[in-house]
Length: 442
Image (cartoon, rainbow, N blue to C red):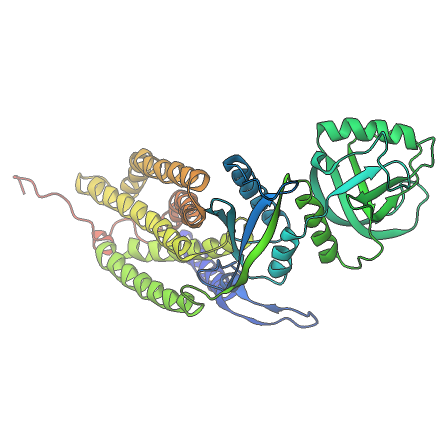
């Protein structure tokens, strides 16, 4: 009965693994759905060393006096600011850095919005939030330098609870000083017209937000834009207003598309090379450990399916060539753990213990050694991610996912498979390449 149970379990797992591999690599049309299914592997985001990249160089200058050179602090703050803008509004796998004394270079993965995003960064819109419909300065004016965050959104264009009119526009969140000023402004307008107006510094009115009947303490407001009809355009307007909050302005001096450093074909070539390496490694494991090698092969296939699923599911993953290397090393951690475990099993058996006891003791005795290796890999990958440049981030993510999957694979998947194996063979050492130690008495 136990043998039949084990066989059924292995068959079911094999079917699930085959299904997982199919879902990982197959692509097909989905009935009654506009998009095709691309498989886990096909859905992984690729960086610009595997695909095209959008690049631009911006000259950074002072807003008020262009003859004054920008300071190092202003350049560094601008780099951080632009990087955050790209991350918020659709840039993927961004590299932003100082090119010379007054310029920054930006490179991001080529997407449908990347070119427009680059242009929006250079088109600053410095706004003034005002409590009266006038081009003249007023007592309650709120300047652009108090803006903390902007997002394109679609919401009611009035604060009135009965408002049924919606429009695209920009949600504006103010910093602590701006929150204080907006509280004073709305306290004033709640009894003087109930409307907040948005002007540019050259006197152009961008829009207004009505229906304010009480003091607003949240430090956030909405700028309706009647000329904006899509979410993407609302996002670009939000970028313009965000850039207007800086004390410097950016001018595009270079803008273009870079071709892939390695090309999309690299993914195919690397995939073929990895498949060959996987087959060779599987043969070595089977020759060395016999049935245990087959178990490690089945575990390895489970590992690959989970690896590909996580790479396409996690939003922080954008795969580069360094990321592929990190994934390979991450998978090698699983193989290394299996080798440590199987060698420990062989050693326990050679000392006179039964196969079942050898399995049990090997898992127990190898735990801390495996955890030590995984801890070093995980801590190292975390450090690389936070202190390394962008190419190292992809490498670190590959290692980190591989480390977590290695622990799961060895102490959950492989342990379960060896448990199922014992009813099939608990006495035949030749099936496992086990041997007893030869003593003097023998």
